[in-house]
Every structure is written in C-alpha cells, then in structure tokens.
Length: 399
Image 1: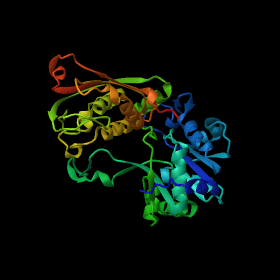
Image 2 (image 1 turned 180 degrees about the vertical axis):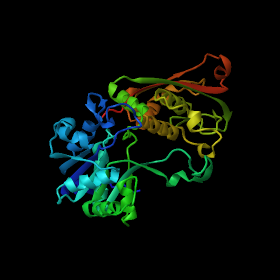
Image 3 (image 1 turned 120 degrees about the horizontal axis):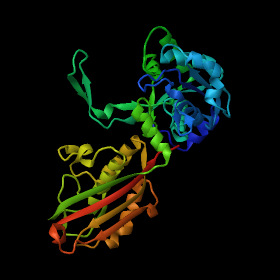
C-alpha cells in the first residue's frame, strides 16, 4: 500500500492540473424504482450533485465530464447544477469502460491527471482525493482501498461450495476516485476497446502492464447500491443521532493486569478474559456497535478466535469505530460507568477520558467516565469482579 501523506503532497497537488470523469450512465436497477439512482435525493441534493460537488472544490481541477444516459444529456446542465469549474455532459456507452472512454475523449487533451469516479459514491472528500492525486502523479495510477475485515471465500462456479479461503491480508476493497496519468488511462481505454472486459479502469491498467498503487481509502466513502444503502446514507445527513448501550463483566484474579481504556491501574487483581478484559473499552465497543446497528463485540471479536487472544481493548474499540464508520456513523459522545470496589477509579478518570477521546476522535469534554462501588452487594461488591456500563451517541457522517 502506498501512503503519500508527506510534506511533498501539497507541492505535488499544486503543480498538476486535474480532469475528472464522473460516471453516471447506469440505471441503478438493483436499487429499484423508476428514477435513475444518481438522480435520487440525498439530503436535499441528488447523488450526482453531491459527487460533482466533491470535486468542484478540488485544487488543480481543470475540467469535469459527467457521463449520463443518452436520454438525460439534453438536460445535463440542470441535473448537475451550477459548478465553479467547466463541466460537460456526454452520453455513456453500453459498459462502464465504454462510458469512461467517451468521458476521456471529452476531456481537454492537455490534462495530465485524470480521476474516474462513480456518481454512486457521494461522500468522497478532499483528503481522499488529494491522496489519490499525489500517488497518481508519482506512480502513474492509484486506487483508494480499504482492507477486508471478513474472512474471504472463493466459491466454485458450478455449485455453492467453498473452493478455497483467501488470506484477508491480501484483500483490499477498491473505491473511487481512481487516478491515472493521461497516458496510462489512454492505454487502459485502448485495451478495453479491443474487447477486453474489466470491472474498473484500474483492472484495465493492470492488464495493460501498468502498476497501480493502493492508497488508504475512506470507510465513509460508501457506494449506494441497494435501498438499504440509500436509507443509511440519508440517515447520515438527517442529523438524527443514534444511541447504543453496552455492558461488560469480568471476574478478577490475582496476577492479572487491571487495564481500563489502556491505562493500567495499580492492583494485585485483574480481569480474567480471552482478551485483556478492559471492561471500559468492551462496554463502549458494544455501545458503538449497537448504535450503528452493527451487531455486538462477540460477533466481531469472538473469544473462539485466536486473533483476539490478549487483544487490547483500545484496539477493539478503534475497530468498532471503523465498523460504525462503514455503516455511516461516527461517535458524538460517550459515557462510561465503572463498578469496582478497589482500587478507586477516580484518580485515573482524567487519563481514561483522554485515552478514550483519542480513540473515538472526540474532545475530552465529550467523554464522561465515572467510578462506582457496589456497596458490598454480589460478586462485584465482594471485590470478586469488575463491571462497566456504557452509552454511546453516534451521528451521521455527513460531508
């Protein structure tokens, strides 16, 4: 993976001119309905308008081409809306690669860097675009991608049966915009014109013999494919928060470290568990996953999986934040209550709040942590266990 976020990035971006092809020629049949997907409303603007807007503020932008269904081209200017930069609408082809070819032909010939973006990804942001542009200028072609979280199976074509399991470490989920030096995209398009089929332009560039760099993608840069995707995207922009609760309990044993939000407390006893037993992070992880409608900690990080043996709670919490982002949500505030007889939690509250705020991407003032005892009642009250309750508030990842 190539990460080009370094001091030279701004200089690279400032020195190149960029053309953008926004592919919006599809019918969106998997979404259903009579209105093309790219023209559906998303927070007062269409998917197409939001995608165009993502690039209209891009430094170095010279020209945009929007590829539409032929019957919509005549009304293209109204469908796209006002833009700061020149924007031309053209009719697409039968396949995606045909539409990109038409879009490339419509761009000025002197544009050295070309980005290709799906109109169905309305949440691309400038940091993502900058990474792609900089990597493209250096390597010739670049794709933003996020690592696969799930175990990946390759199935037999003739029947629903696993043929092999692919190591997830080598699987990256590609996004757009994809970037190309003009000559690289020209070569890719020429190859596609010979009859070679591909699912994206990066694949054609690969087949044409050009290396394609991977840059860090954005979990929030989702593609709207199904009705559920659209509903989730609309919730992101609605301003309506989601609230989740979490709870965790562990028995205490001698010789175990007592860790809360990665902060080690002085104690002869610590929680028993498959991971580090960090009840603060475990309860908050469940609260975040619950608010995002993304399951629970046991489903994502089961104690039957050796990967999570002695895993740090702050790592699981960070992963939960990423999972929530993939569902269109980010933390807005958090409140955790730790129930423990001894040692006292209060002397460590400030450090715990600071640690949680860092993982959640929040200000310390947005995170509350409280320590309570159980007044001698039950196992917690007898000092045999530790527990935590958590509440997380999530808001949509609006751009």
